[in-house]
Amino acid sequence: MNFSYPSALAILIFAISLAPSQRPVPSGTPSRVPPTRDPHAAGFVTGTELADGTVPPAEEDGNFILGPTHTPARETLSRPDVSHGVVSELILSSVDSKFYPGIARDPGTFGTSDPNDPAKLIVTTSHPARYTRRVTVYVPKQYLAGTAAPFIVGADGPDPLLFNTLDNLIAEHRVPAMIAISISNGGGDAQGSERGLEYDTMSGRYADFVEQEVLPAVESRFHVKLTHDPDGRATMGGSSGGSCALIMAWYHPELYRRVLTYSGTYVNQQWPYDPQTPRGAWEFHEHLIPDSPRKPLRLWLEVGDRDLLNPNVMRDNFHDWVLANEDMARVLAAKGHHCQFLFARNAGHTDRTVKEQTLPEALEYLWEGYPVAPRNR
Image 1: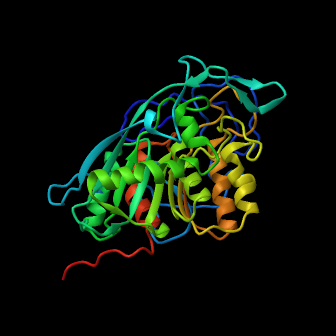
Image 2: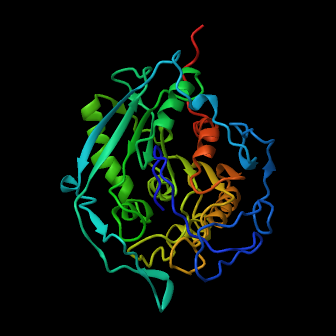
Image 3: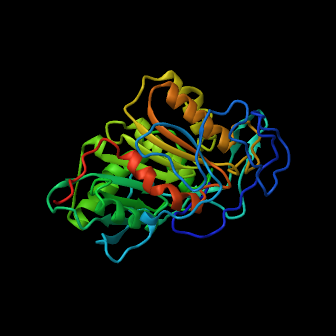
């Protein structure tokens, strides 16, 4: 689903009513209001109830239930007494990309379910199309020229909230002095779109695109060096940008080891269909994580109690965002991953107020164990 961090645009979401304890998703006509799910429903992970307005300790793994009040954390606000990083942009064009020459789906169209397999979507209105994208780069004032810096790659950029938060956390020596690379998508949303192709495809292609076309351009244009240490590289995103963040690290753990997602689209959104991963990112919690050797990944995940459920015409039982994220928390813990999972009350899909409340703690958790510059005495 489409999500842009700095935008205040409303996301139209379509869902069908479902009792919180039910796991199967019924078919029917979608409604505009998703159900409010109960974090204590049968089949969901057991979570620690937090006092309203508080967040979990940044050093603890586990499952937590966030209260209904979401006040912005002070660390997300711009402060005059803190040094601000330099934010710059570059533009990339599809005509120069060997990975993503560009596609688009015709406006006002979507697709139809395959009558022989409801998990497949038939899209006939997608075609080649050019695009340009912005890459917004934040370089902290504390960056030392010539040194290889840790960095975080974000989807659906730019992300001013992330930049403000890094200003404050870096100044307080709570996270390393990292560079943030916030990459806009190629346009559109979901199956048949460029964004959907980039973010929902279960392969290493997007990580390869970033490694070979984005990072070299960033280093060249802004005269910085980016670390090759996978422990010093993180990914983040919301919705399909969140599933993309995990896809990057899953298929290339030699490049990325830290993943942060809001309302991750761990559902069946992949298009074109791939028989190797027939249920798209739903495969993560159904097969890939349980059936694969443990990977060296550290993850922070969030989902809202009113997150998406059946937002399109597909009725395949694989389009429940709450259930998908609950199952992610379960299988990651069972595999022994360091993971912190938040179930947010009074929260929709990629809820802006939840991000404002939790992002500082999420970043601290994400970078736990990585060296941070000591305070000056």
